[in-house]
Each structure stands twice: as structure tokens, then as C-alpha cells.
Length: 236
Image (cartoon, rainbow, N blue to C red; front, side, top):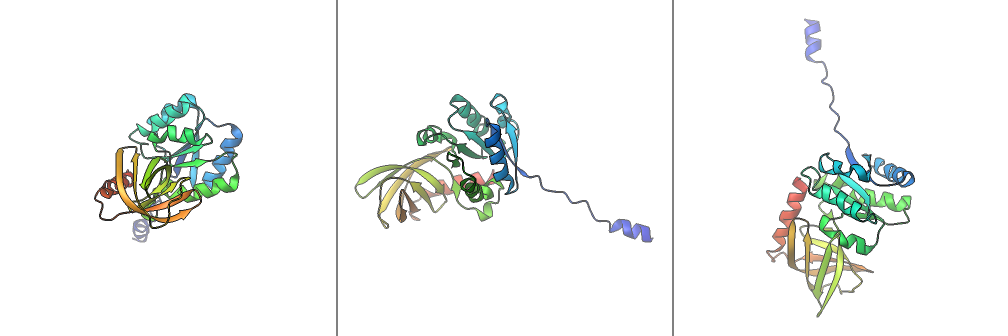
């Protein structure tokens, strides 16, 4: 009887949740080691993937993908493999190096964040810390999606261009050399991977050197398209 009772109360084996994985594609040993160290500090494992085996991004599940942006067709092939894959279409893509022109050339793939060269450990850790919740799928705590895409801003009688930094259902932050005053009424337009170009009214809510924040107009029904896209992104 005692033995049966003990068996009944025997603790169930604990199933450990699989760690998030980031594919490191096409890096030399020193860069790879530095990236691995930064991601593992935040509970994200790394997997080395060569350009010659980048098709793994179309068949194997990864929560993030890190690749150089100055590798020409190789870079595009990797991003195309990931974004066209059912498993990795929403994985977090980190670009390394390259120019702003490179980043915009690949904007249709929705690059989420950039490691700028020369690579420096403190800046790299700061970037991974800022985006780790998205990689770990903790969306309830992370309502802003970091993504880089070209943005057109119309307001104050002029038109300016910039690149998105983060976007939420309520607004977005934009990197731009143009200076818009806080409180200025603007219209922003942009496209996001599966979201065709959308135009929405907003107001400049903050302004810093080379960047600004836009709060979407709650009465503009076009904002709902952005909310739907974000909800879909999080569900995947």
C-alpha cells in the first residue's frame, strides 16, 4: 500500500522548454564568437549556418537569423529563404554591417534590427537586450515591433523620408534627418512585408536629433490595418 501510494505521488518529469535559436549565417570565427556570447547572455542559443547550406532557413525552425548585409546575392537568398518559409516567415532578422542603402534595398524582407560595424560588445548587448523579448516570443511584454522599412512623412508643408525603428498599433518611431516640431500634424506611409503600403494620419509626439515619434490618429480607420498586421505577426 505504501509503495503504491509513493508511486502515485511520484513527481512527474519536468519538461524543459526548448531554447530559442538564432541562425548565424556566413560569419568568420571571431564575429561568430562575439555574436554567440551576446545572444547566450539572454538565453538564446546560436547555430552556425554557412551560405552554402542557407536553405536550412526554409525547412528548419529558428526564432532569429543574423546575417551580413554586404554579401550581395547571398544575403538576399538567406532572407528570401526565411521569409518564404512557413516556419520562419516571422523570425527576427538582424543585419550586420552594410550601409543604409543596403538595409533599404532589403526592406521588403523586414529587417528588424542592425548591428553596426565596427562591432562593439556593449552596443551589441544593448541591441540584443532591446529585442530579446521578440525573439523569445514574449509578446505580452513587448508591444512594439522593431522593423526597418522606408517611411514617407508629409507635414508642415513638406515631404520627408526616413526609416522605421519600431512600430506598434498606436504609433511608430522613425529615423529621419528632417526636423518636425512636436505637435505637428503629419501623414506617414509605409509597407511591411505582407502589409501593402498604408497611409495613416498622426501627430509628432517627440523629437530627438535624427529621430522622431509619431502617434497615430485614433480616428483614422486605416490604423486598423497596422493593428491587424501586428496581431498576425505576434500570433505567428
